[in-house]
Length: 240
Image 1: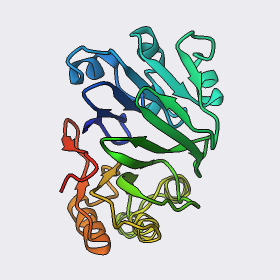
Image 2 (image 1 turned 120 degrees about the vertical axis):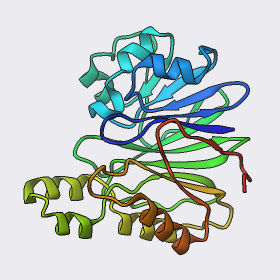
Image 3 (image 1 turned 30 degrees about the vertical axis):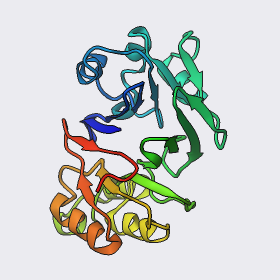
């Protein structure tokens, strides 16, 4: 299994879990031509899941659908994007597992300023993958994780030092996960079988990628990678 980072951050998000027999695209925040290129223009058994309706995660749902990619999202997200009547649109329901090709996906609600899902994804090659972004925290813990893709958006200390305006600071703090919360969440889970932790959706101005990577790796003892556009990561069940 490969994890391909097409784009990450406030300007767009899209990640692909790619096996030999199919692909699961996570988020539709980039033009479909970028996904087609990443998949060598082979869209057979390629499906997409979308966490929520904000544009950096969902702006290109319609283009994905028109390119032949089935898109799974909440009814709210499809309605906001005007795609709920498309014949390739499928609806995700909170806490209801759905099989998408060779993948099993369990969507669960997280804390954001619009309805938003985190995902527990299972596949025989990558095992159990936690995907968590655009949430201030997560009330759940998870058993048997093998790989983790998680938001580490900002540091409150960096924001304070930079003098970020209070209304913007409040919005970020209430809807995105800071590095300390990310660390605490990871430590609350059993990481004994986790091969990789991939940090995503870092703020351009309110984060420090190398310091964040070091903090998470030190606190968890797990190989930690900061996602960058165009990155390809070996994402098998035991990849280190």
